[in-house]
Image (cartoon, rainbow over all chains, first blue to last red; front, top):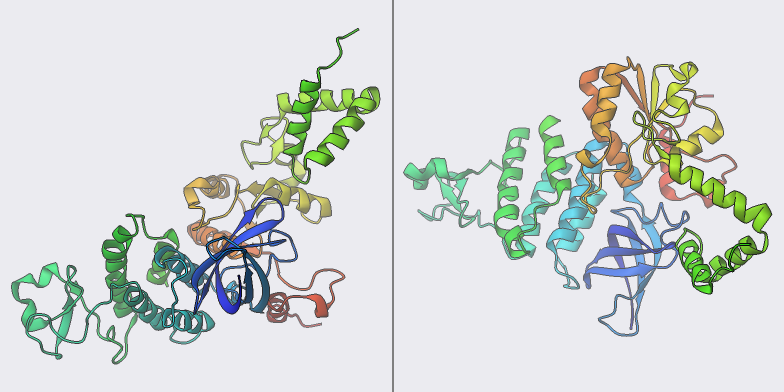
Length: 239
Length: 201
């Protein structure tokens, strides 16, 4: 078995004295693990950092084997993010969430390009808004997408102000009625329309965080969300 | 005369040596054979040194360095009370810094880095002890000498945040072209970091 593709490195752990086991995200093969011979050495250390764009050749005798990767660096994003605390934490959060949420070897035709586009813009103007949109895409790609297009109660697309924490559907101000205090605030712009300020961004991250924790995590064996996301959220709150 | 060593004991020694970093069963066998053949010159002194270290080696209760006393020689040396603490990930990093002799303050060994993958949080490292030292010892500067990896730099930013209320200067090692390095052989990230950290001549 052999294939060649590009991918984003999600994690690396040393294996024995000189090898490493890496996990990458590719468009056609999804989240995929493999051994890199010599990957634990000094020469490969700058290449095998989370977020790196790699040219990958995977080989194994049988398809369900772990297999081994031959890797060539294409773009080392970690080095660019290291000077910017928020960007570095964002990179950590993206990689940790992808590793946490995605099934192994399932193609990611939407989430892969979205993840690459976000990682390429870490630290640039408006990247936090992109990060929030990416978390919505992550929920969508894992089967837990939110429906923010119209009110679940009245059917209107106007005046949407809340998200139901149970169904993930938008609720308008008039449709919320006496249940408003039990609903999550829907910040303007979360549906991708119009601008969004810092408070809106934080409210949006709380909405996605709620569904990541209450929908996605229980489906994955009730593991807690990666600490990297909590650290990123705290840094956004302090910024 | 002592009884001859059982082959089982030799095998047990080979198995122990083979577990050391950089060694495998074949090199362990060669090494053990060398020790046994040069008992007086190599094996006995080595056994005595190992026994002494096994008896006395411990972590310095202040900085986390390995030494044979409660407080390591670096922490007890009054000439090193410069008001600067260099924070490193592991004892091996401290030894690397000492090899160069460029730093004459004191150290603090974290014992690792924050890692989402390995679920290592701040409470698993010696970060609270660092904050206490900065408060108690009248430290003027904390130098973060952590590895230029995602985990290393995430930890560095976290420590800088923790030390913010202490009002201490927090600096980090520069990143760039190593001594004798040729640009052609450097990775893109290092070249980029070096360019961002360029200085006027």
